[in-house]
Every structure is written in structure tokens, then in C-alpha cells.
Length: 130
Ligand code: THU
Image (cartoon, rainbow, N blue to C red; front, side, top):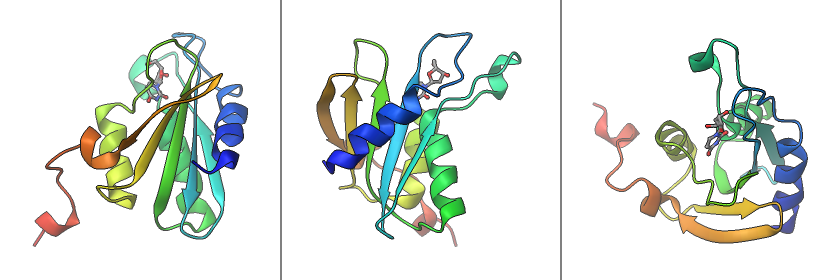
């Protein structure tokens, strides 16, 4: 894992707006343009309107001009693996490939690296569209 991802995910995590779950998450992407893009979860009093850290990081990447996810780190404040939710797996797949590394981290560092294809097998993508 690019060591810059860990610190970027940590910095984003401490900015999380998570007053309802108290579950703080940061995500950081190393994109094809060489830049790191990070984001945090942003909750809302109307609960379903909140969104995940990975979604924020992807938005930052697209806004910044990145086109592909080279690797992504996700850091959660909990003791378990903070693996991306189903919707975020699909969003990561839009800009990644089956072998794209997804680094699951905690405040202490890297916990485990998955490949995107492990997290989202037999996924639907642009190749399925006419
Ligand atoms: N959350 C993320 O930001 N990313 C994940 O990978 C899992 C869950 C957020 C959403 C919500 O704000 C909080 O964690 C609890 O589900």
C-alpha cells in the first residue's frame, strides 16, 4: 500500500460528520493521475440522505480529474474490518478493476488487503450495457 493513503484516510476520518452513528470513516484513493483523493462519511438528520467515505473520495477524485482508482484505503473507527458497503463496492467498480487493491485499515494501520473482485464478484459493469 502506498503509505500516503494511510495518512490521507486518517485525516479524512477525523473530519467525518457522524453524529448519529458515531462511526467515523475515512477513505483515500491513489488515482491514475498520481494524486491522492480523500473523503469522509457525511451523515444527515434525515438518515438515508447520508453517504459513505468511499463515495466522498470518489467524488473528490472525479472532481479533481482522476479517472481510475489504482488503490483505495478505507479506515474505520471500529474494531472490525470496515469493508465498503454494497453500494460503494459498485461505485468503486465503476473506476477500478477486479484486481484493484482495497486496503482495510484501522487507526493502528493496515488490517487486510482485499481485491475488488473478492468483494464484488460477477459484478455488473459498462461491458454489460449495449
Ligand atoms: N460507512 C462508510 O462511510 N463506509 C463504509 O465502508 C461503511 C460505513 C459509514 C456510513 C455511516 O455514516 C456509518 O459508516 C455507519 O454505517
